[in-house]
Image: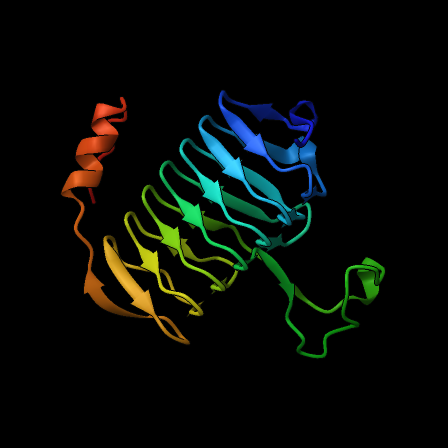
Length: 184
């Protein structure tokens, strides 16, 4: 199991596979009742709430100034990619994190936010600056380049809304677990 003492803060009942790479553990806050599976790779700030699952081989990139924030009851399935920062590739400079600052291309750094109950299926890519609204689900192999609407299921490249998601039981069960989450 991963050495939880390396993290900025960690709650109770947390499992992190020993086969993960968290580049900046001093920037990572993890709530309670969470699991992070093998192959997770993270270069950013990470701020996750309670009852979170991050599946195997998920990548979160964006460097020290990037941020992935996950509220309660959220998930990311296997193989998904969360981009919190990226070179813009517009010719303003050289590309890559090893290039000295004065020679680098413009870089977009914006947080990715998962509101309560947002979930991402397998092999999803989420662009920098995206907020997944409360209860959003993103279907497998989708690309998210725009903020989502609450309690909506999205699929495709780019992801488009296809269905409204039921929320009553999730809200009820969260309340039974002691979470008074406002519904959007």
